[in-house]
Image (cartoon, rainbow, N blue to C red; front, side, top):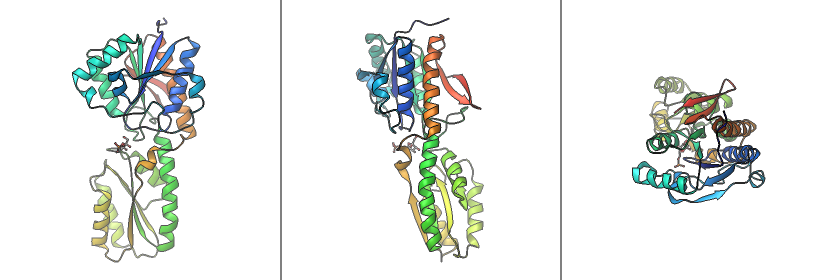
Length: 301
Ligand code: F6P
């Protein structure tokens, strides 16, 4: 059974992630095949509340499909946390005759959708877009692979100088409460220790290793920003145990969020964008489209 949808609204929300523009392009292109209009809301839920929308055309989006960030801009909306804000957003959807909504974002975005469900009868689909890879049940979230590639590229450089000086480097990567970026990038650069929020033993292991470190080589620690022990503290503990070390701390920061999406993220953006529109046309609603074991799955919110 095909659902009669004439106008889809889409927005990006939370932290931007490489691949969001690719997904927007795929959504617009797939919708146009079915003669469906697509409007993009600017600045995530803020645009929904304020009625700030723009029509999206695949021909235009095709030009920026390879670019990082999000052409629609993004925000973490405080107003949408309030019922008043959500009522205004519903009003926007109704007055603009939006039949369905696609949200691209992370866990905060999806929590917002869940709350919206209580008052909104318009079907929606979620696309997991965050560098943190912290959405349960999907192989990768949109942007994670690109962020890891950026982290690797930069840590490789740090490793060059660390090797040259026989220095200890503590490199902090992003991920909020999730250690995926740290694990992936740490393994791929050959780190001596990786500290993630999901483990507390990793710090004890690090201290054990560092006790016998003789400064005859580099020593590289990759620590996730969400770890219970943050980078500066890690560094002072290392110095406490081994006062002779020559140590530097580098925080990679928002560099991990920018840049053109990797091949994997572009493909993910295309697959999830196409799937989101097709899912709506198949009368399914209020699910997240995700790829697990390289297969498309739909998960109820
Ligand atoms: O959720 C994505 C993320 O980049 C996290 O890894 C990080 O903790 C956070 O956003 C940073 O947020 P902001 O851009 O508001 O500083």
